[in-house]
Image 1 (cartoon, helix red, strand yellow):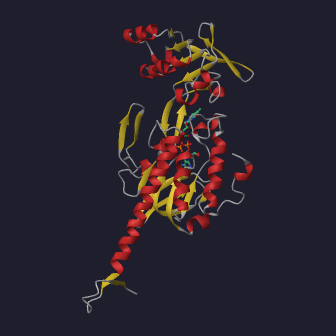
Image 2 (cartoon, protein in one colour):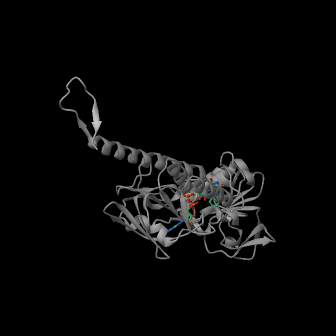
Image 3 (cartoon, helix red, strand yellow):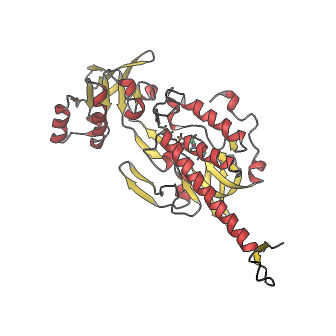
Length: 341
Ligand SMILES: Cc1cc2nc3c(=O)[nH]c(=O)nc-3n(C[C@H](O)[C@H](O)[C@H](O)COP(=O)(O)OP(=O)(O)OC[C@H]3O[C@@H](n4cnc5c(N)ncnc54)[C@H](O)[C@@H]3O)c2cc1C
């Protein structure tokens, strides 16, 4: 994040507590900022609490993001901060540690002790990648070692690709990478023995299988150059696609008791197409609700939720106005109504 975009004077705890926010958004990545931008532009009082650690912060460039292909993920976030603030959204560098339902919405407590309350709560906290414990891997994460063929497969075209398999299900990644390179090796030790049919499928697609355990990721300077095996052999590779365990950062959602649903990557918060959870007024967007939400999908889910939330506000406001309308009883010809004062 550019220093100029960091809040020079973050809102005080008193300022956070002094508003009844229309929407509190926990998490200011692509999903949360996209929701914040639309809601703030819709003249809603929006508070974003954000610890400024987007999942893709390790990568110098992001891909597959229309009009921002190759852009820095941290610059995307700082652009988003600026755009949200420009239309009146408030962003505080605070970690939400507790959330509970109150009479007119939700109360969120932050690590520094601030308490904010709002009519709606949007959880956009993203997810965390747990890398296998292989020396040298974390240092390459986001550069020589990546996760997603859609994000980094094109850049790996024609190169020597290693696939660090974490599970048999992860083999689809090796098959996805086949159009990019004729030199692919799948390192299977962490996933255990492959079913014979899977092994034959890889062979049929000219994808090599290496069953020996990977003991280290070998780099020269900044460049990843090989995977070192447990017996001392090194296998030259230019890029490694790993399969980290992905965990939703959904503490606030769990506290509120939202329903969960099984996915191939474990349990995730259940949401409808617009991001509504099972708890009225609580929304979940981006990776917090969808492990497959790449940046454009995360941003889109934030936009979809924002439109739906603002739609609810408008409906509530019109309903309140309707309740304030009284028929004019003594003039039957005039089928007009007047607003009660
Ligand atoms: C190495 C790597 C490279 C990637 N490359 C690409 C790519 O090229 N293209 C692409 O489309 N996708 C890419 N992705 C996926 C991308 O990271 C996600 O799609 C995106 O980050 C999801 O956005 P999000 O807003 O849901 O979550 P995030 O971007 O992770 O944002 C969540 C925000 O919430 C904050 N937060 C979390 N908990 C709290 C809390 N309790 N209180 C306050 N704030 C909190 C975090 O600090 C963070 O700022 C990549 C992922 C990785 C790991």
